[in-house]
Length: 214
Ligand SMILES: C[S@@+](CC[C@H](N)C(=O)[O-])C[C@H]1O[C@@H](n2cnc3c(N)ncnc32)[C@H](O)[C@@H]1O
Image (tube, rainbow, N blue to C red; front, side, top):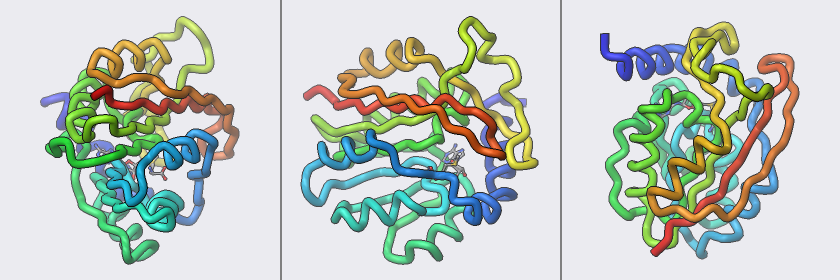
Protein backbone atom coordinates (compact mmCIF):
# COMPACT_ATOMS: atom_id res chain seq x y z
CA UNK A 1 0.00 0.00 0.00
CA UNK A 2 1.11 3.59 -0.65
CA UNK A 3 3.16 4.72 2.37
CA UNK A 4 1.78 8.28 2.25
CA UNK A 5 -1.79 6.99 2.38
CA UNK A 6 -0.84 4.69 5.21
CA UNK A 7 0.54 7.40 7.47
CA UNK A 8 -2.22 9.86 6.68
CA UNK A 9 -5.04 7.43 7.30
CA UNK A 10 -3.34 6.04 10.40
CA UNK A 11 -2.98 9.54 11.84
CA UNK A 12 -6.50 10.61 10.84
CA UNK A 13 -8.00 7.63 12.67
CA UNK A 14 -5.75 8.11 15.71
CA UNK A 15 -6.52 11.84 16.08
CA UNK A 16 -10.24 11.27 15.61
CA UNK A 17 -10.09 8.75 18.45
CA UNK A 18 -8.08 10.93 20.85
CA UNK A 19 -9.73 14.27 20.04
CA UNK A 20 -11.92 14.43 23.14
CA UNK A 21 -9.14 13.28 25.46
CA UNK A 22 -6.76 15.85 23.92
CA UNK A 23 -9.35 18.60 24.40
CA UNK A 24 -9.82 17.71 28.08
CA UNK A 25 -6.06 17.54 28.74
CA UNK A 26 -5.21 21.01 27.33
CA UNK A 27 -1.59 20.05 26.54
CA UNK A 28 -0.71 22.98 24.28
CA UNK A 29 0.89 25.96 25.93
CA UNK A 30 2.32 29.34 25.03
CA UNK A 31 6.05 29.85 24.56
CA UNK A 32 8.17 32.95 23.82
CA UNK A 33 8.51 32.09 20.10
CA UNK A 34 4.72 32.40 19.71
CA UNK A 35 4.89 35.93 21.17
CA UNK A 36 7.74 36.72 18.77
CA UNK A 37 5.77 35.35 15.76
CA UNK A 38 2.72 37.45 16.72
CA UNK A 39 4.81 40.61 17.18
CA UNK A 40 6.45 40.22 13.77
CA UNK A 41 3.13 39.87 11.92
CA UNK A 42 1.43 42.94 10.46
CA UNK A 43 -1.87 44.24 11.89
CA UNK A 44 -4.88 42.11 10.88
CA UNK A 45 -2.49 39.50 9.47
CA UNK A 46 -3.93 36.45 7.72
CA UNK A 47 -2.84 33.25 9.46
CA UNK A 48 -3.04 29.63 8.36
CA UNK A 49 -2.80 27.15 11.26
CA UNK A 50 -1.93 23.67 9.96
CA UNK A 51 -3.18 20.97 12.33
CA UNK A 52 -5.31 23.38 14.34
CA UNK A 53 -6.48 20.73 16.83
CA UNK A 54 -9.07 21.83 19.38
CA UNK A 55 -8.71 25.55 18.58
CA UNK A 56 -7.38 26.12 22.09
CA UNK A 57 -5.39 28.03 22.91
CA UNK A 58 -4.15 29.19 19.51
CA UNK A 59 -7.22 29.99 17.34
CA UNK A 60 -8.59 31.98 20.27
CA UNK A 61 -5.27 33.77 20.78
CA UNK A 62 -4.89 34.73 17.11
CA UNK A 63 -8.46 36.06 16.93
CA UNK A 64 -7.94 38.09 20.12
CA UNK A 65 -4.90 39.65 18.44
CA UNK A 66 -7.13 40.78 15.57
CA UNK A 67 -5.68 38.34 13.02
CA UNK A 68 -7.68 36.79 10.20
CA UNK A 69 -7.49 33.09 11.03
CA UNK A 70 -8.00 29.80 9.16
CA UNK A 71 -7.34 26.49 10.91
CA UNK A 72 -7.06 23.26 8.92
CA UNK A 73 -6.96 19.78 10.40
CA UNK A 74 -7.20 16.25 9.06
CA UNK A 75 -9.46 15.10 11.90
CA UNK A 76 -13.21 15.75 11.62
CA UNK A 77 -13.49 15.21 15.39
CA UNK A 78 -10.86 17.86 16.09
CA UNK A 79 -12.66 20.26 13.73
CA UNK A 80 -15.96 19.59 15.50
CA UNK A 81 -14.44 20.33 18.92
CA UNK A 82 -12.60 23.41 17.62
CA UNK A 83 -15.85 24.84 16.17
CA UNK A 84 -17.47 24.36 19.58
CA UNK A 85 -14.50 25.87 21.47
CA UNK A 86 -14.00 28.88 19.18
CA UNK A 87 -17.26 29.37 17.23
CA UNK A 88 -16.14 32.59 15.53
CA UNK A 89 -12.99 31.06 14.02
CA UNK A 90 -12.85 29.49 10.55
CA UNK A 91 -11.87 25.80 10.41
CA UNK A 92 -11.63 23.42 7.48
CA UNK A 93 -11.11 19.66 7.32
CA UNK A 94 -7.99 19.30 5.19
CA UNK A 95 -4.70 17.42 5.33
CA UNK A 96 -1.61 19.61 5.26
CA UNK A 97 -0.34 17.27 2.54
CA UNK A 98 -3.08 18.74 0.30
CA UNK A 99 -2.44 22.46 0.95
CA UNK A 100 -2.78 24.38 -2.31
CA UNK A 101 -2.72 28.05 -1.29
CA UNK A 102 -0.70 30.52 -3.31
CA UNK A 103 0.76 33.60 -1.53
CA UNK A 104 -2.37 34.03 0.60
CA UNK A 105 -1.06 34.23 4.17
CA UNK A 106 1.09 36.62 6.21
CA UNK A 107 1.81 33.78 8.62
CA UNK A 108 1.70 29.98 8.71
CA UNK A 109 1.62 28.34 12.14
CA UNK A 110 2.47 24.68 12.81
CA UNK A 111 2.58 23.66 16.46
CA UNK A 112 3.40 19.98 16.91
CA UNK A 113 1.96 18.90 13.58
CA UNK A 114 4.68 18.46 10.93
CA UNK A 115 6.40 15.92 13.19
CA UNK A 116 3.52 13.63 12.20
CA UNK A 117 4.95 13.44 8.65
CA UNK A 118 7.76 11.26 7.35
CA UNK A 119 10.76 13.09 5.79
CA UNK A 120 9.49 12.75 2.19
CA UNK A 121 6.05 14.11 3.09
CA UNK A 122 7.65 16.75 5.32
CA UNK A 123 9.64 18.15 2.37
CA UNK A 124 6.54 18.24 0.16
CA UNK A 125 4.47 20.01 2.87
CA UNK A 126 7.38 22.45 3.43
CA UNK A 127 7.12 23.49 -0.25
CA UNK A 128 3.35 23.92 0.12
CA UNK A 129 3.81 26.03 3.27
CA UNK A 130 6.31 28.33 1.57
CA UNK A 131 3.99 28.67 -1.47
CA UNK A 132 1.11 29.62 0.88
CA UNK A 133 3.08 32.56 2.29
CA UNK A 134 3.01 36.07 0.88
CA UNK A 135 6.37 37.79 0.30
CA UNK A 136 8.03 38.53 3.67
CA UNK A 137 5.52 36.24 5.44
CA UNK A 138 6.42 34.35 8.63
CA UNK A 139 6.45 30.64 9.42
CA UNK A 140 6.29 29.24 12.97
CA UNK A 141 7.27 25.57 13.34
CA UNK A 142 7.50 23.56 16.54
CA UNK A 143 8.43 19.91 16.80
CA UNK A 144 10.56 17.57 18.90
CA UNK A 145 14.27 17.00 18.45
CA UNK A 146 15.86 13.72 19.56
CA UNK A 147 16.99 13.52 23.19
CA UNK A 148 20.04 11.44 22.30
CA UNK A 149 22.56 12.14 19.53
CA UNK A 150 23.21 9.64 16.73
CA UNK A 151 19.95 7.71 17.16
CA UNK A 152 18.13 6.23 14.20
CA UNK A 153 15.38 8.81 13.76
CA UNK A 154 13.33 6.48 11.58
CA UNK A 155 13.17 3.75 14.20
CA UNK A 156 10.08 3.64 16.43
CA UNK A 157 8.20 6.18 14.32
CA UNK A 158 5.02 4.14 14.59
CA UNK A 159 4.29 4.70 18.24
CA UNK A 160 1.51 4.72 20.76
CA UNK A 161 0.33 8.15 21.87
CA UNK A 162 -2.61 8.47 24.23
CA UNK A 163 -3.43 4.82 23.57
CA UNK A 164 -3.54 5.26 19.76
CA UNK A 165 -1.06 4.04 17.16
CA UNK A 166 0.25 6.84 14.97
CA UNK A 167 3.32 8.05 13.05
CA UNK A 168 5.50 10.63 14.84
CA UNK A 169 9.19 11.40 14.26
CA UNK A 170 11.82 13.64 15.87
CA UNK A 171 13.69 16.05 13.54
CA UNK A 172 17.14 17.54 14.08
CA UNK A 173 17.99 21.22 13.70
CA UNK A 174 20.25 20.23 10.78
CA UNK A 175 17.41 18.49 8.92
CA UNK A 176 15.12 21.51 9.30
CA UNK A 177 17.83 23.94 8.21
CA UNK A 178 18.54 21.76 5.16
CA UNK A 179 14.93 22.23 4.04
CA UNK A 180 13.57 25.74 4.66
CA UNK A 181 16.48 28.07 3.79
CA UNK A 182 16.83 26.34 0.41
CA UNK A 183 13.12 27.10 -0.20
CA UNK A 184 13.72 30.81 0.40
CA UNK A 185 13.07 31.19 4.15
CA UNK A 186 15.43 33.03 6.46
CA UNK A 187 15.78 31.75 10.04
CA UNK A 188 14.90 34.47 12.55
CA UNK A 189 14.77 32.50 15.77
CA UNK A 190 15.22 29.10 17.38
CA UNK A 191 13.77 28.47 20.83
CA UNK A 192 14.20 25.28 22.87
CA UNK A 193 12.35 23.97 25.91
CA UNK A 194 12.33 20.61 27.66
CA UNK A 195 8.81 19.51 28.51
CA UNK A 196 7.68 16.78 30.90
CA UNK A 197 4.22 15.28 30.97
CA UNK A 198 2.70 12.02 32.18
CA UNK A 199 1.33 11.24 28.72
CA UNK A 200 4.34 12.13 26.54
CA UNK A 201 7.27 11.72 28.98
CA UNK A 202 10.25 14.02 28.38
CA UNK A 203 10.12 15.94 25.09
CA UNK A 204 12.76 18.23 23.65
CA UNK A 205 10.74 20.96 21.98
CA UNK A 206 12.48 22.93 19.23
CA UNK A 207 10.74 25.95 17.69
CA UNK A 208 11.74 27.90 14.57
CA UNK A 209 10.47 31.21 13.28
CA UNK A 210 11.34 31.82 9.62
CA UNK A 211 10.63 34.69 7.23
CA UNK A 212 10.09 34.35 3.48
CA UNK A 213 12.64 36.40 1.60
CA UNK A 214 11.11 38.76 -0.96
C1 LIG B 1 -0.36 17.25 18.60
S1 LIG B 1 -1.86 17.84 17.90
C2 LIG B 1 -1.54 19.59 17.88
C3 LIG B 1 -2.81 20.40 17.76
C4 LIG B 1 -2.58 21.93 17.85
N1 LIG B 1 -1.67 22.41 16.84
C5 LIG B 1 -2.07 22.26 19.22
O1 LIG B 1 -0.88 22.57 19.34
O2 LIG B 1 -2.83 22.21 20.18
C6 LIG B 1 -1.68 17.38 16.21
C7 LIG B 1 -2.85 17.83 15.31
O3 LIG B 1 -2.48 17.63 13.93
C8 LIG B 1 -3.58 17.07 13.25
N2 LIG B 1 -3.07 16.36 12.07
C9 LIG B 1 -2.42 15.17 12.02
N3 LIG B 1 -2.03 14.91 10.76
C10 LIG B 1 -2.47 15.94 9.99
C11 LIG B 1 -2.41 16.24 8.60
N4 LIG B 1 -1.82 15.42 7.74
N5 LIG B 1 -2.94 17.41 8.18
C12 LIG B 1 -3.57 18.26 9.02
N6 LIG B 1 -3.67 18.01 10.35
C13 LIG B 1 -3.12 16.86 10.83
C14 LIG B 1 -4.25 16.18 14.27
O4 LIG B 1 -5.58 15.87 13.92
C15 LIG B 1 -4.14 17.04 15.51
O5 LIG B 1 -5.21 17.93 15.63
